[in-house]
Image 1 (cartoon, rainbow, N blue to C red):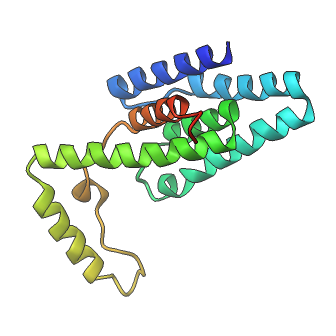
Image 2 (image 1 turned 180 degrees about the vertical axis):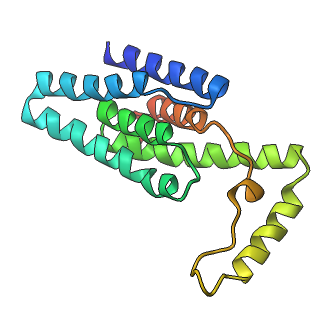
Length: 168
């Protein structure tokens, strides 16, 4: 039953992320609560720790990209929900798969737009000329990479992790 609800959450998040570029709190927050509630009911304190560690890892993995403006808050909450429902190891592997899949999607978008060469040139020059007075890289996030609805790679990463669950 939990896996069925988990798949519904992923499906709804993918659809809303593609259509409106938003992952709704109306979906992620109840998913997080459901993960905690289910594991507390089934295993008590151990279940709380299982769900809690997964939640913290999922939340933490995307917190820095969110703070840098490269990813939305809904994506962070979705990965936290994945962790609360499926646990620490699952969310970590999901994150790895999502990062690879997201990179592949971004690569193909840049290739299709014929922006790959200019992307690497701009990236090289931005890394070469660091603003001395601000201590930050001169990177314009809209200039450097295509934006993608990151809920899609997270969902695909979760499905890959789920499919390879016996191997990992």
